[in-house]
Length: 384
Image 1 (cartoon, helix red, strand yellow):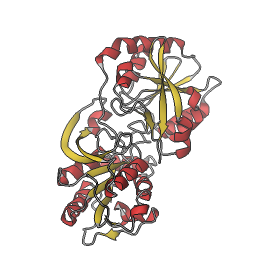
Image 2 (cartoon, helix red, strand yellow):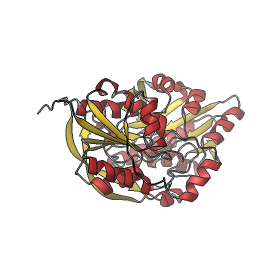
Image 3 (tube, helix red, strand yellow):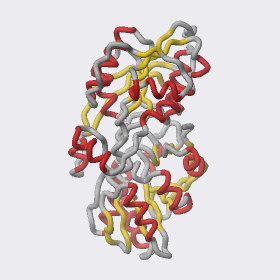
Image 4 (cartoon, one colour):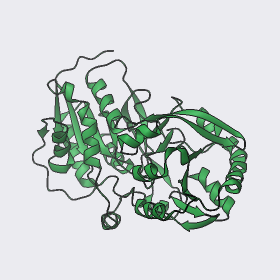
C-alpha cells in the first residue's frame, strides 16, 4: 500500500564514538577504557560524516518531513553538514559519553511518535535503540561501527539514506520486515573467541541491495575444499611477499597451514610463512607496506557470510589507504562456494569510506573456492 509523504517525522541519532576502534584494531569501542585506548592510538571519528552522507539523500523531502535530532555531535552537526534544518530536541541532559545518551534520545523519539528512527552506529548502538523502541517504531542503521552483524543496517551510508527517503516518500519498493539485532562480546573477540547474542527484534525498512542481511557462518560443505585451498595458497605464495590476512574462519585455515593460529577476528601479516605482525592495526600495516621489499604485498580476504561484504565490516584495519597501496590486482578473495551461493543479490559489497577506493574495487573479481576452482562475481561499490 502506498503512503503519501507529508507531515511525517524522522528521528536521527548519532553515536559519535561508533567505529573509533576499527582502524586501530580494537574490534569496537565498548567501555571507557577501550574508548580511551582508541583515542590514544589516534582514532578519528567517522560516525558524524557518514551520517551526513546518509542524510543528503533526504534533501528532496526536506519540505515535506520533519527531522528531529539531539544537539551537537549526536545529530545536529550531521544534519547541518547535509544542508538540512532539523528541529533540535530540547531538554536532554548533558551527554554522559555512553549508551545512556542514545537511549535518552530514542525515548524522546518515542514521545514524538516519529515514523522512522535513523541511527548511526554499530551493533552496540542497535542494541541501545531496540532496547527502548522494540518493534514500536521502524529503525534503520547508518553503518558507522566496527561490528555490524545485525540485519538493520544499510549496505552503505548513502544506501541507508536512500532507503529512509523511499520509506518516507511512500515508495512501494520499500517493505517493513522483522530483523534480528545481534551483538558480539568485544572482550571475548579480543581473546579470539566469538560469543554472539540476540538482543531483540526490530522492524526495519527493506529494499533488496540497499539493506544488509544477517551475518551467516561458514557452511560445512565448504570445509574440505577450503582446507586444501589454504595449503595451495601457502605453497605458492612468494617467500619475499608480505601476506596481509583478513579476519575470519576462512583465512584462519591459511594461518594454520603456515603453522600458527594468529588472530581469528583481527588482521595478521606473514612473510615467508612466518607470522611477523599479529592483530595489526592500520598504522602498523602502512608501516609494513613502507618497508616491503621487491616482493611487495598482497591481501588475502574472505567474504562475510549472508552479507557479502569484502571490506568495511569488521576488517577496517585494512583501510582504504592500505588497499590503495596494495592495489586491486594484489587482492586474493578466498571463500566457500556454498557461502557465495546463498548471497541475495549475488554481489559482493565494499564500504571502505573512500568513494575513490570503492570505485577502484568495483567490477568483476575472481573468487577462489577450492584448488583449481574459482568463480567470478561482481563487486558493487558503496554509494557513499
